[in-house]
Image 1 (cartoon, rainbow, N blue to C red):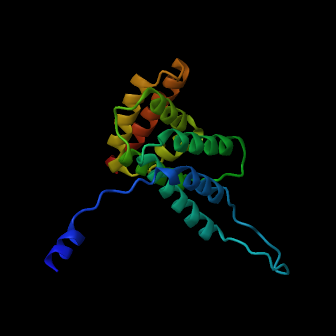
Image 2 (tube, rainbow, N blue to C red):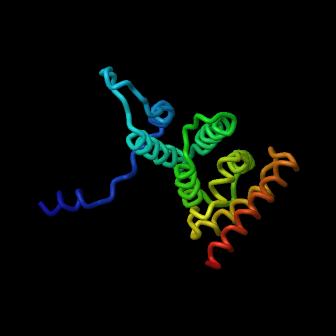
Image 3 (cartoon, one colour):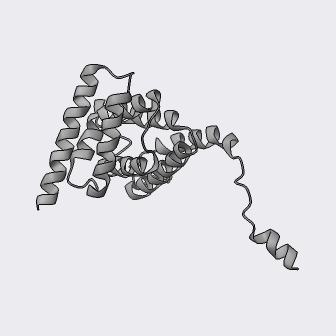
Length: 188
């Protein structure tokens, strides 16, 4: 009996779930593309309210962050960046600013420098999107995450070989705006 109890209390090795990564990523991408459906009251089609859709998207972002933390940052960063770039070009967006702040703040808590060149470039492209820049410079971005943002920006400016000098300058100027917003927020 005591031997069985010892076996139960021993920490078991973490199972290899890497085979789930492609399927989980595809599932999250599919669910993330859902939009609230506005229907006529006379139809019986199923619909999702804005609140339900936002909750589902937040869960997808959690899944994306999990996949990222399990060693697959590039597909996640590239996908989220493509969604933000698409939303910069059209009024119909998959992410509102609160979801962007949620994702970036959790992203900054999940990853830390030093970044690989490709990860720094992907993160830089994410920060270059106008919707991300606006979300990070708003007063609603968590002030406790600002030091992580500063550290990430400084690292990617040094490391991202895939970004042009103009893109790095744009990130640096957006970063200064975000830093200024942080100081204004602290002064209140």
